[in-house]
Length: 402
Image 1 (tube, rainbow, N blue to C red):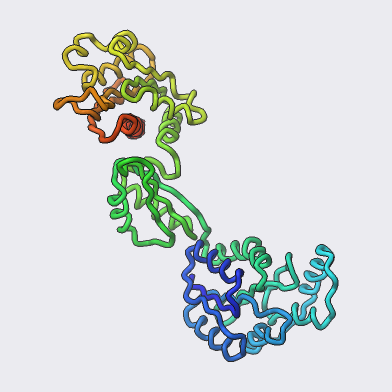
Image 2: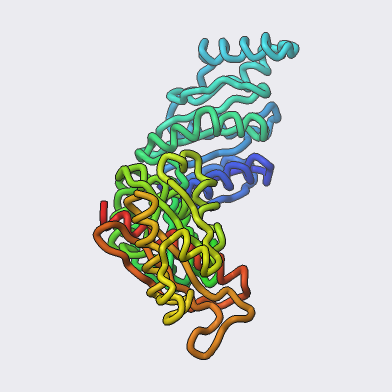
């Protein structure tokens, strides 16, 4: 919807309503401050009516002789100013509740008379009231200059009114993407043309591999459905959450959904994966065990990794990662297994096996899938990247296996 704001003073109320409309992603055609004369009010109103669906008037309803907005609008739309019983009752309740002195009748008439056809809303913080009317196919909204009353009007009445007006609600919704750089995500998102909301992209993790896409604005369910379809089609291999959930949260939820039990064997990551998983409430329903088999001896004793494999291929190898998983399958009785092995550095690397070399294996009784990476960074960064990638690969595996 297109909106105009007309005021007669650059007050805090003007700034407040402008910011709220911007947050709601309304198209603000004009926000103008004008002299409160009949000619100026009519000039600004003509301008606003040409392009806007909703026109806000802020202020101009006080006791001063210069406060002539309601009189000008009544004449403009060919209606009378009405001092209604309903408005008087609103005012009486305010006086009783606030214990304010009752102003003279002529003051009440000045404050409480509105153009016929306006719905008046009860005051909460002062004598001035707010009102909404529809004339010439436009919604006309009168707001007081008082910031407190303006806030009350927005949160108690206007927010719902604007949402019902076009079937939209202000929402913040998220998507989580893994394995792409931020500029790649932004480029792909630029193809989404039906933007009735703001889209921002934030890197959550080193090397842009974990990305949050945040959508913020007034949207209908149709808008959300269109965005969901676009994200699923565009980021099918990299989208892991249609919400603001962590990798570990999604992994636990999927294991629960499909009734799977998980065992994890960690060498390089030293318990990081298990720690991330147990941070999620309810992880005990799906996580059977987490083994930190750091030494070769532990790999042989706990995971049944063959001595020949360790001697011939080394602890950091696809063969060892594979046997770590098959060992878990044999000893734990779980139906999903995950293992990591690698060189975190700073020492221990070579030309053949550089620092950062990592093998991640994930599988079940039907097969084990092995993935090779060479991560950049210091010791902690390599281990963190390995843990994140392991969780992402676990998510992809569970989705495919179901």
